[in-house]
Length: 205
Image 1 (cartoon, rainbow, N blue to C red):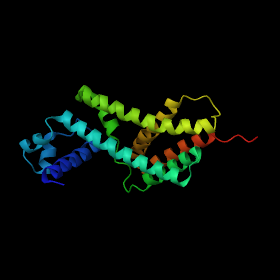
Image 2 (tube, helix red, strand yellow):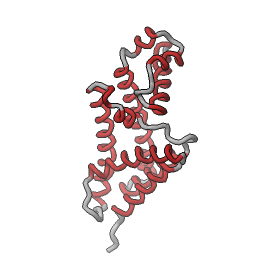
Image 3 (cartoon, rainbow, N blue to C red):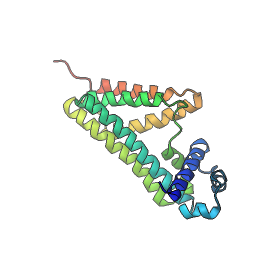
């Protein structure tokens, strides 16, 4: 990685830590510059303003999360190609990964932007919405494959059910931080897993 790329990544790392710990509004460009030990012109060489910084942070966060989720659920499919069993295995692996984070989940960039949306332009807000929609599509595809083989025992909107994983993860992050219980997030994912198992439980004939 070239020096300029390393500097850009360092700026993103510093900004991400600040944003996830105290929000965008309380994370100033000046403090990012001070911690990175570069000049203002050095910062603005990489990011023209806070919107561009937010866009880069969000895209990197989305790419990283997508890669992690896809890796986990691809592994689950390798272990069992039955769509229900694979989804349940994937959710368990996901919960275990979250439990292994030594200090708990650092926070959600999507939520951080949502809470400070008045600070950003339409480009940032549209990307934030797209990240959520991408999660919806990713999990709806898996859920539809399950439903095709195991009809649900209750009438359920597949988009809403797919969105539930985002709600569970973001809500679990808040719970774990407020309660000081890093394991709370993994427990919430496992409860979602239990609901999926009951909802699509095979019918005995």
